[in-house]
Amino acid sequence: MATQQQQSAIKGAKVLMVGAGGIGCELLKTLALSGFEDIHIIDMDTIEVSNLNRQFLFRRSHVGQSKAKVARDAVLRFRPHINIRSYHANVKNPEFDVDFFKQFDVVLNGLDNLDARRHVNRLCLAADVPLVESGTTGFLGQVTVHIKGKTECYECQTKPAPKTYPVCTITSTPTKFVHCIVWAKELLFAKLFGDKNQDNDLNVRSNNSASSSKETEDVFERSEDEDIEQYGRKIYDHVFGSNIEAALSNEETWKNRRRPRPIYSKDVLPESLTQQNGSTQNCSVTDGDSMVSVMPLLGLKNPQELWGLTQNSLVFIEALKLFFAKRKKEIGHLTFDKDDQLAVEFVTAAANIRAESFGIPLHSLFEAKGIAGNIVHAVATTNAIIAGLIVIEAIKVLKKDVDKFRMTYCLEHPSKKLLLMPIEPYEPNPACYVCSKTPLVLEINTRKSKLRDLVDKIVKAKLGMNLPLIMHGNSLLYEVGDDLDDIMVANYNANLEKYLSELPSPILNGSILTVEDLQQELSCKINVKHREEFDEEKEPEGMVLSGWTQSPATNGESASTSNNENPIDVTDSSSGSETASKKRKLSETEPSNHNKETENVESEDDDIMEVENPMIVSKKKIRVE
Ligand SMILES: Nc1ncnc2c1ncn2[C@@H]1O[C@H](COP(=O)(O)OP(=O)(O)OP(=O)(O)O)[C@@H](O)[C@H]1O
Ligand SMILES: [Zn+2]
Image (cartoon, rainbow, N blue to C red; front, side, top):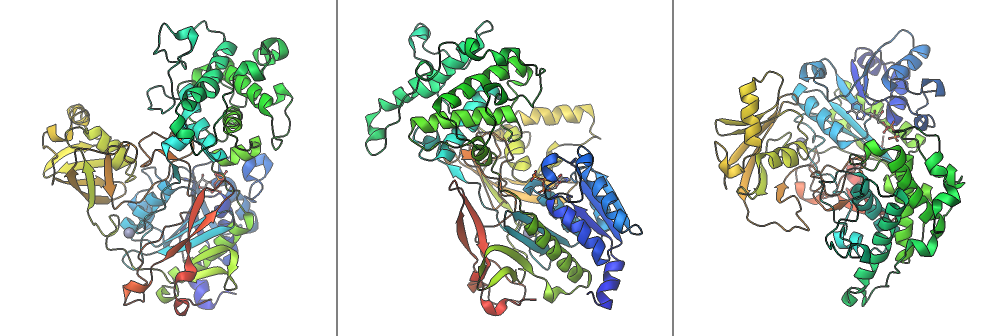
């Protein structure tokens, strides 16, 4: 039961909730039942069938409708007299500016991505509004409190780098199924169906007899009149047959490794599939239908069933045929999406054939989809616990009970008999570029990198700025906005194509740039260090930024896109778990002895997820409430 004092803090509070998904539904219900009377909710999504098992404010009839609105209506049915306002919109929209945020007493995040979390963090700092941040991953979860100047901001600590694999493991020497999945989705799928101009480490040259006259022929190019099945077989034979044979010829590679087996389509498939099951040509799906699927056409019903080599090979060819027959317009623009059934079928089959070749155990479509989509299944109970903890912290924030603030971690197994681990929050990190204005350092080749590289790879992708402005001394080099005249736009566009050292105000070794986002009211300095060479494997972007918060790739992002620091990237850190780093507790005078350590949690496919191990913090400092 809430005390009188708590009740009055709750009643008078105006609260903003961002996200009405798994955590958000629980949170809205708990807020309403705890006595909150003025709640605003922002969510950009509509309800999907897959949300219904845990987002209990939604019913099947709501599928396709705004989450924020349906959540509001559902709660108003049992709390009709409170004020709930819903916004079906992206929190990054300009209408949610600093003034919008200023009207709230506290902001509560129930988001699922780092990008939006960082944006809300910046607006809360700019508006000086407390933020209660949260995240869950399966059984793990955490709630943290962020108050400008008092506790660390959401970006004070670096986030874990997404799990990456060396390129050569993926392209030549896979040893785990996840390596085959990464190869299938980031290289093969991207090569066949994605942007042709993207760098791709897949071996594209054919040296088979048919093309001996043109040794450099790109086998992935399909000529207009080429039969789709023949084309599919050509790709199959190239990637699973001749490429493997070529790799085998390098004896050194296989001295201490198991040798892979080349697989050719003629050895596993009948001569003509069209006669066997001409179904994909005749099936009734319409062009552009993302629900197209080969499974029913091949009589495969159970996604949890393990397919043999022949079945995988059939799925491979038939899925490729379907892409060309029914989704031709999308070819050249596709990135892998875990919700795209045909893409999942193709990637599962390709990964399994490669796995077979390398002697790695095969996996079902269900398992492969989980690995390819980095899916950790949501646990409704964790969301409910986390939502409860958010409300507890929100009430402390409203009562200004600074000494009682806690960051709470929901653990999977009891540790010292505790499943919920509360820890005192930490002071702001004086080296944080977001809340403490410490300059970042950028190593870059100022003669070979263009302003466009800086804008795309650093300012947008890494610093998460939406409407950036770049200044060097008094010279404005770049700016985005609706109020720019044509001449300015032309000047800025021309600057984008110039090398840094050739800009009107040249950026050279020792230059200090000011980079700002007016919407986020964020301004930071970048110290530029010229460097001639970069390691292509370890630093594929040709530049290195120090002191920023790592942003994981979004689903389906290609391995070689600018967002990733590392070549092949597979994880999505939805919970916002953090890596070990020096932390300063609020009440602490000696900062030295509270380094948080991390524990490695091995998931099924050996993807390592780092979670903080709060037990490392001295027990004296922990007060269980
Ligand atoms: N930039 C944003 N603006 C507004 N809402 C956002 C933004 N980013 C994410 N969200 C919302 O945050 C919510 C997160 O909820 P949750 O983690 O349960 O994800 P979900 O999409 O509902 O489920 P799942 O991803 O597991 O299918 C989603 O409803 C999503 O729409
Ligand atoms: Zn900070």
